[in-house]
Amino acid sequence: MSNWKSVDEILDFAIKGEEEAAAFYTDMAGRVEKEWMKKAFLSFAKEEQGHKAKLEAIKSGKKLFPVQKRVLDLKIGDYLVEAALTPQMDYQDALIVAMKKEKAAFRLYSDLAESTDDPELRNTLLALAHEEANHKLRFEVEYDEFVLREN
Image (cartoon, rainbow, N blue to C red; front, side, top):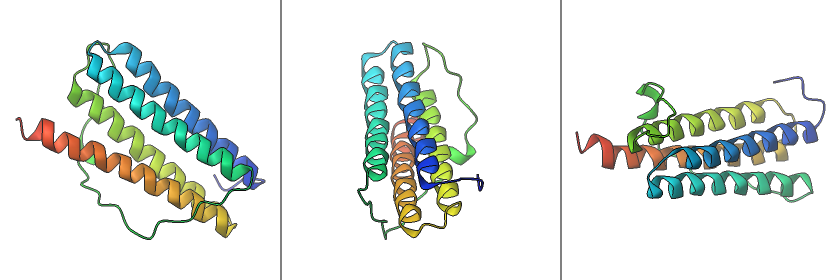
């Protein structure tokens, strides 16, 4: 990842990643049978589209400032095996998929931040990593409340 030729290259790569994440969640919404799960996946897709919009705004000159507060990591997603992506997947598997995706996005933005010498871009990428960590935490809390406590 350290072979970027420009800030625009990094941003384009991140924008493509957000497009792929939104498409993934939209596809998942079409695969599940339960209406409330469809809504949840469409909500995830909308959040990823929001990230894409932020990146595009940054590319056109807007600044995003870093967040000073660390995000709690329950690490629940770190110890779960990959869930099978099927139309009949249950809520537990859907949450596992979401946690894994958000963790990967967090790592991506953290690695991209490390790959640039531009302090403003680094701050922007770290802010986006922070948002992804917040998403993962939200899924971990949901998993803790609705899966672990039921078992």
